[in-house]
Structures are given as C-alpha cells and as structure tokens.
Image (tube, rainbow, N blue to C red; front, side, top):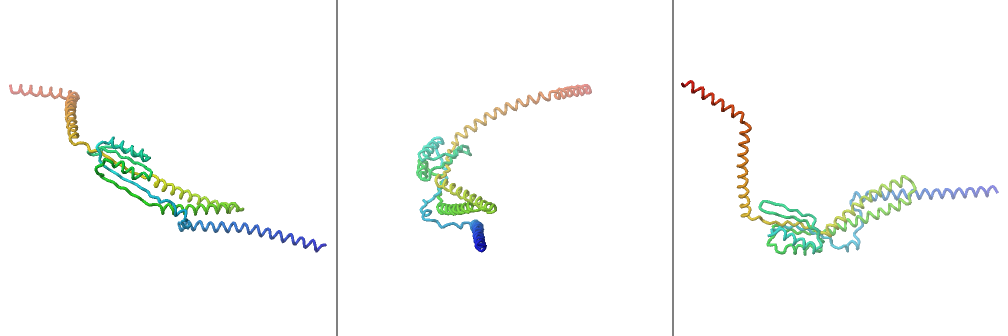
Length: 278
C-alpha cells in the first residue's frame, strides 16, 4: 500500500515539473522572438531598406509624373488677359492660389500661381498661350517619380508587416519587461510608418496637381509717362516757390527784434559820423 502511494506521489511530481518546464520554455520563446525582432528592426534602420522586392502589384502602379511650368509674356491689357486665364482655369478645374500685382520700371505686371490637375496641364498651357506673340520665358518640366513612389510604398508595407509581428508578440508576452521592450519598438516603427505615409501623400499631391507660375505685364507708354512727369514737375515747382516765399516771411517774423536793433544801431552810427564831419 505504501509503495503505491509513493509511486502516485512521484507521478504527480513528474507532471508538475513538466508543466513548469513548458511554461518556462514558452516565456523564453517570447523573449527570444523579441530579441530577434529587435535585431531585425535595427538591421532595417541601419541598412536603410531591408524590404521586400516590388511585387507584381507594385509593378502595375501607374506612372507618376510631376509637371511644373514657368511662363512670362507681354500683353496689351492686364484685365483682359487675367479674364482669359481665369476662364481657362475654370475650364481645366484649376485653382488660382496666389495673385499679386505691382509696378516695375516702365511696366505694370500681375503674377499668378495656378494648381491644375495633371491631365489638364497641356490643354491649359495651350489656352493661355492663345494670342501671345512671344514668351519672355517658358519653362515646362516633367519629373518621373514612379520608381521613388514604388520604393517608398514597398518600405511602408515592410514596416507594417514588422509592426503586425510585434503586435502578435505583444499579445503573447507575460513579463512587464518584455511588454515595455516590445512597445518601445512598436513606437519607433509607427513613427517610421507615419513618415513614409506622409512622403507618399506629398508625392501623390504633386503628381495629381501640377504647378504653373504665370507672369504677364504691360509696357507703360513712354509719351504718356513724359507728359505726366513734366506736369507733375511744373506743379511741384509752383508749390515749392510758394513754400519758399512763405518760409522767407516766417523767418523774417522770427528775427524781427534783431532787425529792429540792427536798424537802430545803423541809424545812430550814421548820425554820429555826420556830426563829426560838421
């Protein structure tokens, strides 16, 4: 009877040790996975792109082209030209972001910054060029950013996969130290994910809406400038002469005591010389 009880006790002790070993192994496995993922994350940061090769989905991404334009030309009437550009912008679903007017030596000008959907870029340039004899400046540039877009997109997907692996690991972690270490890695990865998403949004914005800077000006007639300038000079001379006379009389009023004393001194001196001569 005693031997049976002893055997039962030994059996239960064996089962208890096996269960403890299993739990310890599970905890150690979580720690090992955390170390591996941490090492993998550091490797990505150091190499700068340990990401998956572009998939067939990435290869099928439409070509990403950024178009920009800078145009300067002379016109006969600023307001008429502006209305022409505004009509073309409305037709092409464009937005006039900036509108500045000013005067330069011999000219008056207006500068516009227009954002227009890329598919309407060429038609808009054609519309606003109607009636322009020649361009002082016309620069049209196209930049292909497809490869850059695919590269950032691939890095973003790799970061998101790594984030999901850390989340799975966090759900299995039991120790506070493991949780804190995993959450620190998650915070860093999420920051990188947000940065990549911001870069993609910026590229998409530049691709979707092209930017065109337009400057048009009118030359001021030389004859008109001389006539106006001469008339202003005559009027300014008349006003200046009147102001000078006024200033002279005002100055005389300010020094009248000294003039009175000087007159009296001259009178007495002349009178004295006359007595000596007699």
